[in-house]
Length: 160
Image (tube, rainbow, N blue to C red; front, top):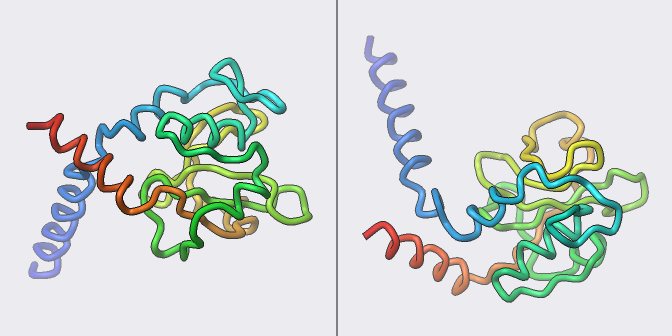
């Protein structure tokens, strides 16, 4: 009985943290969500079609952050982040081609990321899927703490 109560409390706390996230409807999340379903297009950089790095470049340009149009080049931007320390907006990189970084997406929380997938367009996938676990390379933080906090503050103001 005690275990069931503790489990219920833990699940309730987890639910509250997820629902109460300051980024529940942040500009960053809103921008990414608005692009779900945009088709994949080789070298695409507009909301008519994206490749993976074109998608991340487009999203971050909305926040005055300039990224190169190459996943390998983007993997050199910002600061390296441990997988256990990922937060919303971090870039996550994968080796899908067999020779180093060849794919990029944006971490959205709960071990998920949004990206432009070759056969699906812009979708959210779980980094725990075996395909991504085997191919994960690194993560980079391009949103500095001030920008991250500013996005957070904008959301808090909107909720008031």
